[in-house]
Amino acid sequence: MTTEHDIYDESPAPLGVPTLPERISADAELPAAATGGTRDPVPRSQWQLFRRRFFRHRLAVAGGIILILLIVLCFGAKYFAFYDKNHQDLLLGPVSPSKAHWFGTDQLGRDTLTEMLYAGQISLKIGLAVALLSTLVGTITGAVAGYYGGWLEQLLMRLTDLFLVVPAIAILAIALRKFGQSDNIIILVLAGLGWMYVARVVRGQVLAVKEKEFVEAADAAGATSARIIARHILPNCIGPILVNATLGIAAAIVTESTLSFLGFGVQPPATSWGNMLSAAEGNYNQNTHLLYFPGLAILLTVLCVNFMGDGLRDAFDPQSKH
Amino acid sequence: MLNYVGRRLLYSIPVLLIASFLLFAFVRSTFDPTARLRASRDKTVVARERHRIGLDKPLVSQYGTWLGKAVRGDLGQSTRSGENVSAMLTRAMGTTLQLIVWGAVLSALVAVGIGVYSAVKQYSAGDYVFTGLSYIGVAMPPFWFGLIAIELFAVKSHLFYSLGLHSGDSRGLGLDYARHLVLPVATLCVQIVASWSRFERASMLDVLGADYVRTARAKGVPQRTVVMKHALRNALIPLVTVMSLDIGALFGGLIITEQIFSIGGMGRLFFNALLSGDVYVLEAWMVVVAACIIGFNLLADVLYGVLDPRIRLA
Image 1: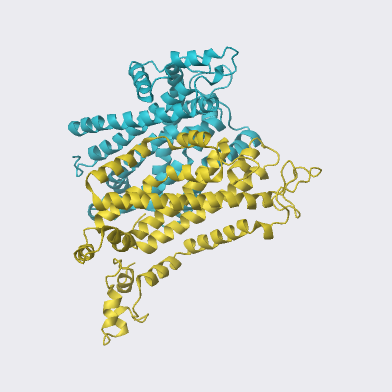
Image 2: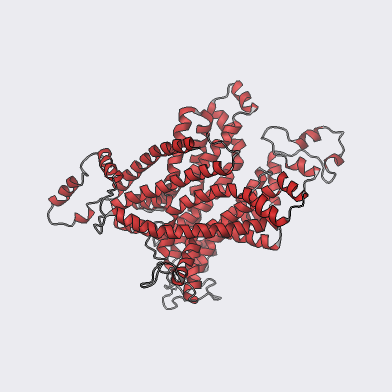
């Protein structure tokens, strides 16, 4: 249902252009009833509109809260975990979930919940860092290609195509074997194969935005290209960039876990959710809790990230359908 | 159209050449084909072998030699087993194609079914269940789904098998084959079904709101005909493109599935070659998979133009 009020409230406008409610509220004589009557026609900034739309998306808000909780719990594992990291109880061995060990223990009697919190540090760190890095590289590549055009665009976009046709997981596995498997290498390699998607989206957005009048105005006022890209064009592409960044987090966490599961990612004694699952493979019919819980942690994290992505997409572009 | 396909094919040749050169250089710089000779007592044997297979020449000429043989069908020998690489690839591809064909057909049927149901009964309980499941399907690491599936369906209950595609000396299609195929195909497709069904739902909703569907309804065309004929046919067009792209990506994505279920296809070929540093197998694998991805990308664009005459391919 689209009411008159919704149309006013949801109309997307580029930053810096007065939105409809603002223009209406500038006219002091206009009665409140004209905008639906339920709300005062106070001027709202883009940021306020965005925030209202995001918080209306309940799943996105829930996802955000759970994600923050997970981050706090994992990185504060020292304070929250009931047991010390790598605390073994060899006499106890593997037990199913109980009051003393909520998620059970593994073959060495280590508390699964504690191990999962510490493993989450690495999984989450890799996910966030990869998304940040690949978004940065992708945005710069896409913006430069879209803004300057010509041979530079051809070169950069053909490079993007090239990266898109190589079988990613295979390259990742070989690269990790070549360069070693420390966290930082894993982050660099994953980001090296994740930036193309952002680059394509940003290029498309930049192509559309750079034709707008305010870019022409900035150009006429003598702004440098770098300033036009950074101050005038990119802020108007922030929606798709952020949405793609959330997709990047999700993809990085799943890819890291896959590589670690295959044995090419995070190496013991360091743990991530992926290599906990690798260690648990074969625990069929007994100790199945070792199989379920780390996977559930990945599932929960990725779900929350995806919900946030949906919320961001709706908030930045209320007219989008997906 | 033919013109367009021809041009795209021509254009994909340099892409494939550059990609294969980079992959070749990447694999060569990571693995050493003479590694197995290092333990030899005769210190000159490594140098002689390097000279024999041309490792002492510059990289570009090594690539040229490899490419020259490759286009004539000679992909070299496995450094591990001495077997002909093209024979290994052919055999692995046969196995892998079974997984991909069954996977693609079943995923398409299931995803379109779910998508149409969800769109026609939008906001019904069933729609919410399917939407929820698709969120979970997209977010779940596929290998974890495989492990859980083995635990539930192959170990706890012995409904399906989790090793290979045939047991013992059974061959061909049959119950045994089906019981082997279910879990790997499900693992391969869970993410795909989830994303395709969401895509089909959105595209179906789009079409159901179109003017010509309203016109058909106004003329009194029964619901079934409207949905199956007027709406579905058009809603499939964008899905076909996505399908083609995803199927191309499957060729690389089989590594995990085949590893978990011990199926000797392309994925396992790659995995074993990687573990033993089998250079020629890795190089050939990379190029074949990259070619598959490029081919299906091209197919996606062509199909889009064929199915939707409004789209002009230039």
